[in-house]
Image (cartoon, rainbow, N blue to C red):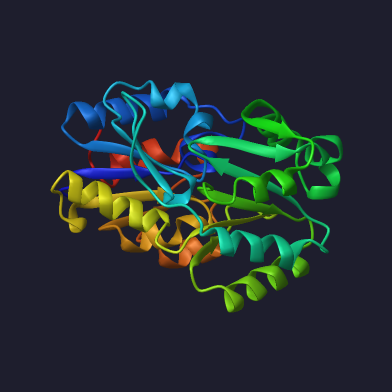
Length: 277
């Protein structure tokens, strides 16, 4: 298999359940890079929240962040392409969801923000102990996150709606999708609705990087675990889902590897893509 570019999701894909990079996965990435394969990050995370143990791997050049809303060159932190939500759409999103039991996260130029209510009452919003620690360590906490979002409505890479109720979550997704035609909606974990401009998405990011490097799409591979990876995994020349992935993602993948806690990325690099030792 002649793979020249691999896009890797981070959480629950490249990283284990504790949020760390295993030695096996690190060595597999390094081996692939040494063989001339480009490896890029493709994450829902904002740039400033990317783990150093991944972005410091020599040879990883680019990061698709905020579900494709912003693409960075890692070496000098230059944002090479970005989309921002239209301010009128931000206003509509906030107005349409204000009466639901939700809180919000906001992403601006690679920096992540959340409301203090998320930190003060994480159970209400469906946060696990691990996800709460991640939020605490990567977000700037705002007293009134809704007011902050409205104040910065002209410069938002993306917005997350945090809701710990699946039927309400599905209703909000349906409502926003039917009311706004200039947004991209996805979800990486059960309590999040992730919203960015319509031209975002990890597929869009992978296409941008492949064109930048003059690599035809058929020579690309992509790894993921969640619904926000579906468009990218389906689009890539070879799409890989983790064994712990959502059923929706598994349905479009070319291959299902081991779980993120079993070094599924390393396993596929070595045994399927044949790009590492």
